[in-house]
Structures are given as structure tokens and as C-alpha cells.
Image: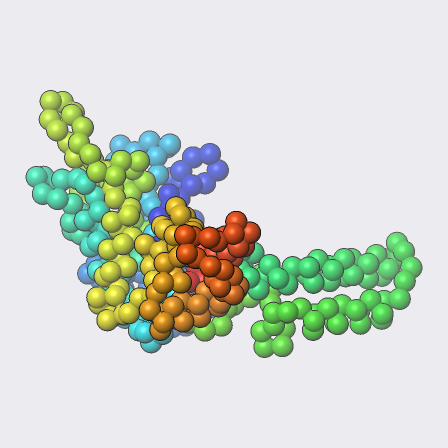
Length: 344
């Protein structure tokens, strides 16, 4: 599970309306008949229109400045292995989203009217998306790039010849282009994989737009707070403040596992990701010491991201991993994290 929280920003200031973001989330509905469209949903309702989402978010911004975010975007990105476990069910994803947002509410170290923040205080709207497209962070795009660059150069040569700017053999250039298209290492349905091409397999994920203000429009609830959990004196009273992102990420992951009886491998865990970022040597050492079946699955999951797992054969007693091996593995895993290939 790969989870992100982002404050939506346009140019120098934060977006004053949710319109552009909601329009972006509606992209998968374009051209579809009504029965096939995915509507927005929240904690209690399943059929919410884009117009209602915009209205509710835009009207819940009391006393917020232009320099403050009016809403946040949360994405819940299950891995293909996690999606397979729930049979890529949109209803299961909705169920999980509603439980995950309860966890989100609990991560606030705040009280409203003398009670801890709860799900009833959170104004949010979510949407299940069923597709993903290839981006520049994906291994397939990165490894196809040298071919893409050469193909573009040849196409530009053809165009210059056609426009009379230079001379040359167009048929030969077109033959070279066709050869490069076939030779690119990553293909899908007989075509070179390029940016914005729809990815195969299970790709469902959830986009959530959550208001900065609580449902009463009185209190600010910012998951972007730099305070994890603390108290501050205001007007002679001690006020709780902060949001614990670590707790949200960990507990959202645990919620998925508990809800669907999912057996998570170490490399899929948030704990593993944190360990990798903080101490790569320890991360690699832990993997090599996993039980045989768990270690085999960990290697399988890592290999899918393009990580060369033969580097794990380097002796790990006393953590004698070479810096070259660590840097190689960090590069591969870093790209995997960026693209959400595995849930770390």
C-alpha cells in the first residue's frame, strides 16, 4: 500500500476552488455511459455528483487565507498483489476507504467540543479509479527512453526531408524507425510502451479530496501540520495540536490487512520503507534473514520492480554490504517507490 497526502496548489497560491482537481478526477468518466461511471462517495453516501463535491468543499473554507490550502488530496494505492487479494473489487475498495478515513481522523491530536476528532468531523469525498498510465518514473519508460530519443531524431529527419530542408532516403529512415519500435525492450500488445499508455493488470486506486476545515466549518484540521502531537497554550488554555502521519500510514496498512485477512510481506510494509530510507544496510540485512518462504517472496516482489536481487548474495554478517551494492539497490527501490510499483 502506497499512501500519499498532498496540499493542492496552483501557481504561487493554493487553489481557491476544488473545481480543477475534481475535473481531473472526472477524467475516467469522460465518454462513458451513465451506468459505467464511477461517482464520488463519502462515509455514508455512494452516489455523489462532481458538482456537489465542488460546492461542499468550496463552501467549507471559513477564515482560510489565500496562502493556506483549502483542501488536501489523499491517494490510497494498493499494489497489484493487494488488489488481487480483493479481486480488484470497487466495493471492497470503498469499504477500505471508509475504514482508512476513520484512521485518518484518529491521527489528529485534536479535540472538537471536548472530544477527540472522529470521522464525523471529517468532510471528504472519494473516487475509485480503475486505470493507471505509464509515466517517466516507470521502469518501462526509462528503459525504452534511448529508443524513444532515437526514433524522435529519425522522425525529425524525415520531416525535414519532406519539407525540403535537407535531402535523404525517407524509406530507409522509416525502416530504421520501424526496427527501433520493434527492438525497444518493453512492449505491450505489439507496441512500444510510451508515456500515457494504459497499464495492464489490476490498477485500481482511490483519490480522496478532504476539506482543510472540519464539517462544522469552525476548526482547521491540517494533515500537513509540522507538529506530530503536542500541546500549546492559547488564551490561557492548553490546546492539543498536530497530525501523526506515521500513525496514519501504519494503521491504514494494518486496517487493510485486518479487513481482508491479507498476509503482508516485509518489503510491502511501511516499516520496511521507513527502514530503507533511514538505514539501507539494515533493510537489506533484515530481508536476507527472513524465513525462507518469506525471503523468496520478498525477492520475487523486488525483482518485479527491476531490482537485481543477486546483490543480496553479498555477505551480510557485520553488515558487510558494499556501498556499490547499496547504491544500486537504492536506485532501483527508489524508482519503485516513486511509481508505487510495490507497496513500500
